[in-house]
Amino acid sequence: MPDYREIYNDVVNTNSRYTLAQNSPGFRTVVQSEPILIHLSGRSLDVGCGIGFAFEHLSNRPFQFETYGVDISNEAIAIAKKRLQGQHGMQNLDDRLKAIDSQTLPFGDGHFSLVTCFDVLEHLDESDIDATLAEINRTMRPGGTFLCAVSCRKAGSEDKFGDNLHRTVEPTDWWIDKIQPGRAIFDGHRKQLILWKNKTDAQTR
Image (cartoon, rainbow, N blue to C red):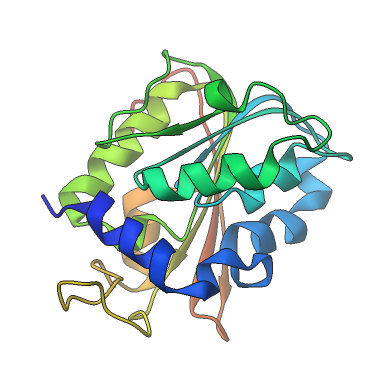
């Protein structure tokens, strides 16, 4: 498995684009999805939260979430905590923002009513995509919502080892078959696919 932590610690420390909200696919997708998200509530988890732009936005009104975030980059989590510390509603950040070292999520089964994952899956090898989706499904309660954004093109930059940052570049049909969403929207300008999926009692995938 690639050393994702080393890769994305380097990205966070060397690419200033990742530190700006206007460049965050998660922040952009949450803003665009507000008409749906304001009707949801409960605990939310942002998988691959980076320095916390989507986490921060979902923590505030008009949303009704108890927000959590995880990222493979401990550097990103440290920046997120420093950036958000002291802001209104940002208590207990050590419990709510966590660095992870694998695809395993440090939460119990059915813990979240909303799980988001923005511009993350295409950065993984396919076997790690499957493991991540399985963990997302495990930690989402029946009736919960999964909101995901994936890029269907190569990234404009490479990682420190010379590989394209988008390790899995596939067409929209591939991602739809992989995730089996109830709703899919394709942004042709950005080559980005937005996917919504609700978990039923019987779903294991």
